[in-house]
Image (cartoon, rainbow, N blue to C red; front, side, top):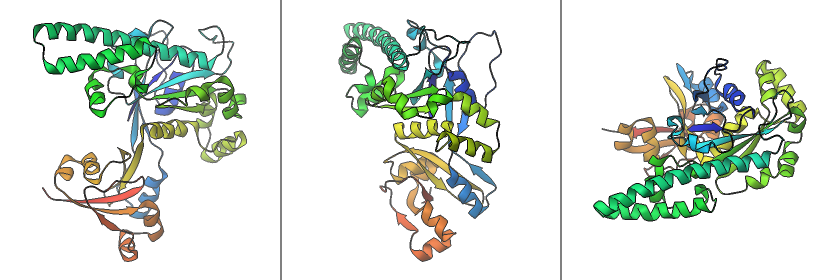
Length: 358
């Protein structure tokens, strides 16, 4: 999974990026540039299976983050041609919910809903520019050759332009899977699923749900293909300096069930409909990310194309069943290890060994 982190200036998005990825702070005074970083997807099942199988290697799923320089009102078009945003699966918009006299809000006041709407409009205007340019090129191509595929694409882009001119993000437009595939090469930003990350101060984090509701962010995130989560970058930075037990006690004092950074990743997975299956053995215990509803043969292709091509059967056991039994041999005896065909729909937490021949 790859996510782009966007936001206005002084909202804490670069701090969040650094906490997620462990990246160093950018050099002071340098020209703002997109930054790339990687983080591990928290999954205690990998550790639990590692304790059973004692592999030489434990491998977690990962998320790649792109930290984009702050966007100001009227600057959304600058995002259109950023190579770093091409291929991202979602956009994470960090909105500010903390006070800081040292860093005044660029809009002059604290209003998270205004900021969410402001960046949404910038994405829409950026996409409108892209759609308009593409339509101009299609019109020229149709005049020269009048190819059927260009005519079809023009009809699609006219629909996009109409929605964008009505200030409607493309993620809310009813598109077929074939139409979405056609659009993948254009990096249309308002078509991406949107995760709104509310960066709160400690006092607001104690009753985050109430704050998100009162500001209107909860209502904003109720829209199609939008999700919301609250974090506090200052709290996360402080907890990063503590040992595991002290950090847990700190979270409990604030009424937080999990680290905020874990919540960002979990909410991203839920928004995209992602799950993880696992593989085990003496060499490696590993988590693999797939979309919910993926069938066994396609899931095998995540490991290697040869396994997908030569797929025979999948040996499957649920993580909880394997944990309870203690070994694959015990699962066979209990009847919890089963054989599934290529059309089996993989579930979150399935532990799978693929049989294949090439």
